[in-house]
Length: 242
Image 1 (cartoon, rainbow, N blue to C red):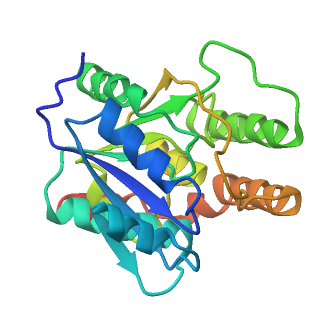
Image 2: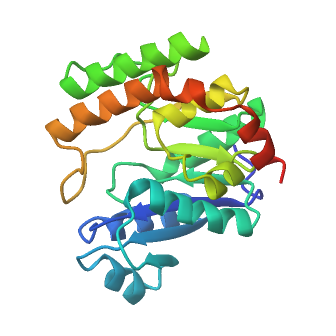
């Protein structure tokens, strides 16, 4: 059982999630009541913000839509300023289960991992689909560039320790994406996986349709194989040591 006396924040980026935000936050309150949470309303055009206000949810509301990376980084700035020990990336669409948060924290404490990925594929094979083919290719590219294998690099359920929180809070190039995982692994940070199960989206539509999924995979591939090799490892040291 994880020591949830550590300061843990569930960071919940939300864009147009009026149909699922209540379910996601109530799941956190029911199954991870010992941790804090923060909804980052990413300039939603629907009732997401008003629902959160009516229910008294802890929320940071952005005036415009910044996208996942911008919303995530806004939440990481808050986490850094509040000196949290761990931050859990938790989707607002109802796919993640708060019951696994304790497992992520336990893994971080037991292994000293800087990032723990909630993986759907630790104990089972990936299903055959276009998106899973892309995930398999990203796994291969990370293995090629780091020598380590991450079975579920596109999982959106991740834990970040206080060692890496400042990097996401201060560097606009650090997003919650597989290329960032690859870069951090190559720079000596430890990444582990724990098995989780994920549900189908409760409501709304995924941002990644087929076309966007293909473009996403291409962008991740170019970044992992080419772009990140031109970034200086010293950037991490200078940021994390501040």
